[in-house]
Image (cartoon, rainbow, N blue to C red):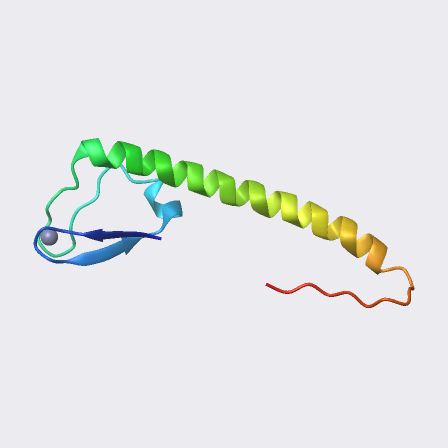
Length: 83
Ligand SMILES: [Zn+2]
């Protein structure tokens, strides 16, 4: 989540996923525009973040299904994973 605080004091959040689709950001209180020299690197950051998150999800899902294939076979050990 990206947290923003405007000069008027308003604080708001934009998810990285939403930020990748935005070409402008306005303060919901005073409608001040986030300067374009901030928008571009913020958007680049958000795109990197979303891609990295998706890559992590794909890799961990693949590793988990490989693990589950082994764990589905009868065995003496009981193994579970948690966050
Ligand atoms: Zn504002």
